[in-house]
Length: 262
Image (cartoon, one colour):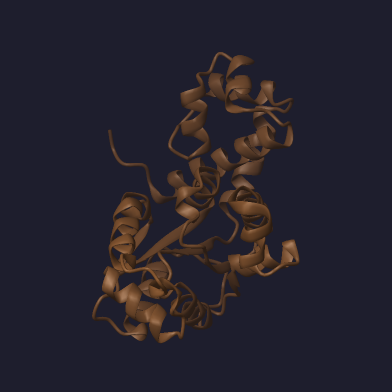
């Protein structure tokens, strides 16, 4: 079987996101939606992730269960697939997501967004206080809401995400379905040096095993980060070289087809 074309992949991603959005609007779990159709929970999950290609019959069953029509879903899918995309930078702290993101945004004439800052603004609290007072689950809920708002706006953007967003199944699935993901890969030593150079000594403060912990964390998330559409090994490369590689990839893929690239 031949590999789906770029357009086909985009349509399947847009279809999956529309189905997921409708399901969430109706406050249905995957299990509940599957129970009201003859479509398995696993297949619906694949559809929402943009990895499933439903037949007309299956799509009609899903649409009916969501109190809509197949034609409305397809119409929304076509519209969404033609919208400008969001580019999301992935990686641990010190990967260069903010710096390279801003440079890429400037090169392409696209707005830059720091997702953590959006979360902080929504909570009306510094990010450290959000975790201290409300914990990680609260942060994840706000992160997903901000991500849904950003992606739902249909506007182009370059986004720096949190280093741990890949561990949030919902948020990462949403990113993979609706954004071009770029992993800025670096060695543990690179992450360490860059964070220290920024004046942040927290990684080593009273933690003799900090480097070992960093290595373990990077290894644990490597398979998740590797799901990105573009993976760039930044070791030994300048910011300009990394930025050039990202922008060339986006131009080759015609990611911002309707934008006036600078």
